[in-house]
Length: 364
Image (cartoon, rainbow, N blue to C red; front, side, top):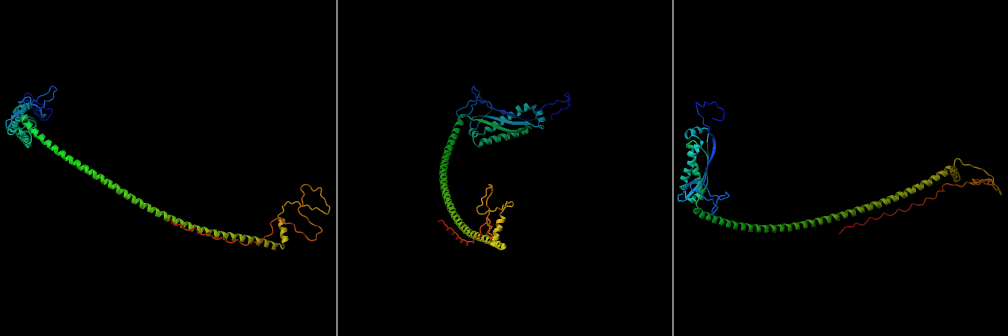
């Protein structure tokens, strides 16, 4: 029954509690130990048997005493528990009456058919392990006991059998070691050669890289020199065109300036001519100029002056501005204090020659 609470009349029936599941049973050989609790080892480093009757002991087919450790993982399932209790009584009785005796019996019977050497090395030991496991599982299944796994943990072989075999194995291992050392030496030589090849290839690549770099650099310098020459040529052409344009501008400006001066002088002369023609005579024009130049608040005083006249009360502000001869029948024009008579316009200056353009400089 699964775990739970069940109303049971103990006077009517008895219930035995059986643990369900897997458990481990091990048979081991007693070994010699040192004072510190470690196992004593022989010359080959194997533990030494203290009691030949302990564990699973049997003679090999060639007459050597063999000892063995074995571990079994077995258990009772819920459907198998009633049969086990009814047949053997409890779980401990199942282990003591079935599991452990069957382990010893099967291992002894199967191990006695092998030589000591076969149980030490080779595929025969694996066959022995597999045969023992299969037979043990079949025996327990007949008794309604489940075997999960059975393992031969260690087989103790006598030293007189084990030592020659181990020495042979050591010799084989040494041979393999020497072969491996030779292979290692060959690999190291190959590696050194490959390293040298890599170094040579690296140097070749570096030299080729430098050569390509110099070639590209020279090509770039040539292209730069060509661009510089073309730039200088274009600059010279632009400077030449600029000089021509400046010369033309100077010529045009000179002609315009001379023409402007000429027109100004002609206009000034024509203005005076028209003014004289408007007043009738040059004297009238001069009088008009003189009159327009007088201030609006001019203070005029008319004083008579004859021969031997001496003014003593004229004051410091007195000054002679004009004289008029009373005895003169004709009028004398007053002096003109403005602009002088227009002079003839000089001929225009000769036009300056244009500056020749600079010569084009082409770099070599």
